[in-house]
Length: 540
Image (cartoon, rainbow, N blue to C red; front, side, top):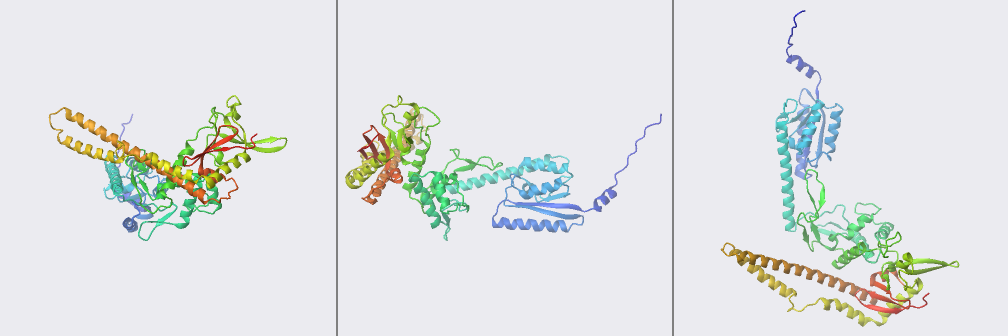
């Protein structure tokens, strides 16, 4: 058997270089700036010019595209369209080499950086990071790249934290950027402050007033679309969600709530609702209001009332009316004096004659045994009786209305000698805070009772602050009740004394509840607390 021989064929550097020079490398560059500020725009243009010259002036390189994402974050490649387009061309083997300024320009996410470098290496496409002097074609280990890209990610995280910290410091001083885009009602004024857009403000006021008048979100949507009112984005079609957001946006009463959302993970960049994880900052009277503070708070109360509605009947059946309805004002105001359930509008057909009546839902669904004494009331009779009650208010009950207006103020007014009065609470709080500061100075004393005294004083300070908050809330509700009662008085005073027609809108605005205690009468409670009992006629 012949002896095995092995011959080494040496590398031929000249031949290798010749083969490479035979065809020019198709080179692409990737650029990116982080923001859309003017100075960054200049930086962006400089990078494009730099790589254009560098590639075209190289003898063995052929410019195959400059890919640039302007104003896009480097934390994730998800929204970087040019980057993704470049990767697609690389996949199709249309690029041989990629140049980029630094790792932080390529990606500030360590995992993304390693991932795309590996993909490009598997396709035989190296990346040159100029600042770090790294060519992935000659790199024998990913450890250096991992370290450097980790530093880039840490830099991005630090920048993100610094930006967020700077914003929060500005929030504490009432400084923030007012967002005018996709926001109806305001524009940037000549002095740089928000100013009201009259035609858009009219639409906003209509939305608020319609909601208080009992219109549903769907009905308001139809009004806006039929009136040709455009959305904040210039569309003709509205959504009920957009209307709901308008109704709950405190900016329309001139205030601003800052830090409603925050970014928990800077890599994901997705905003999360701030449910107490971070402090919020509330600025009152920041800009001109489109709707009054009273109207805004009344709308919030109405939103809460509609959301909190319970099913009308005791048993849960498919016909229960547990949701708000704006079609008829009496649907949520007319209640049975026997079982407490709501009444429902029902159409009867008797010997071919159509008749509309209101009946107790509990009796309808569960039979006479569930509610044996509730009467059915013809709608025409009900409307006539309510109309008479309103007419009596207009013509005869002005003194009672005035008494109802002042009732809420009398109820919430307290004596200055009362231990829950604002003056007493504030004086006591001042004394306790002084005592607390004095105890802190003695904390180093060898006295075991100091810690217990500090705890007691702290607890009393907390209790007083809670009382102050509760009192402020109750006073706010009292003022809101007074405002509603005042509006009723003004509304009735402005009505035609010869009012002859029943109005669902008027009932919605001035009536809180109508109770049917028997077939002879109804009891009407008006906004502000005034109650009237009115006799029913022609009850069947």
